Length: 239
Figure 1 (cartoon, rainbow, N blue to C red):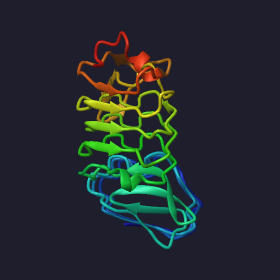
Figure 2 (cartoon, one colour; figure 1 turned 45 degrees about the vertical axis):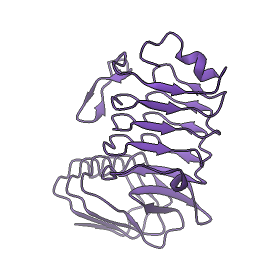
Figure 3 (cartoon, rainbow, N blue to C red; figure 1 turned 90 degrees about the vertical axis):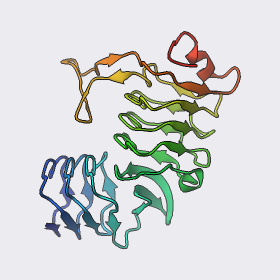
């Protein structure tokens, strides 16, 4: 177990690969950085105090048995249904990270009121087959949002304007993406297959991902005459 009371910032990757770490407690501090607990495969208990105001990208990536994060009296975060949310005035406003132990669909009512999501929020979530943003107002689906996940069906909000690079890399199971906004812009390679190793996307010497065309088919459900409909033209893997 690790207990922290006086550290202000837990830097990125601090406990990455600590395969024996089972419990973590943090009473003070301000920030938990990117991938802090990456691949802490036995981590099962986390308690974080009310002073923490910032969480980085997927702090609990690769935590294979973690089912809850307890934010003690926190005005800033809550973990509900194995999803970590940022709070504003007590309401869920941002989606930070879906824990990889989540094993059921994410219904529209769960995301009602959510306005934003963090990069890689659903990355490597193999057992979440359906995510419905239709009751949210998430404007941007960020980089690698669903990369390496097992998602089958995703419905975007009518407020969504952009789907960014890598949002659906290596999503062999993806069959349907529903776009409800006629002006939603999809990045060129959102559906590509990206070379990866143990859940991590690999990049070449220039910092670019190593991509190949998607092999499986995906159906885009889009408004007639929309930007997304035009995007689909000429892409053999899109129905």
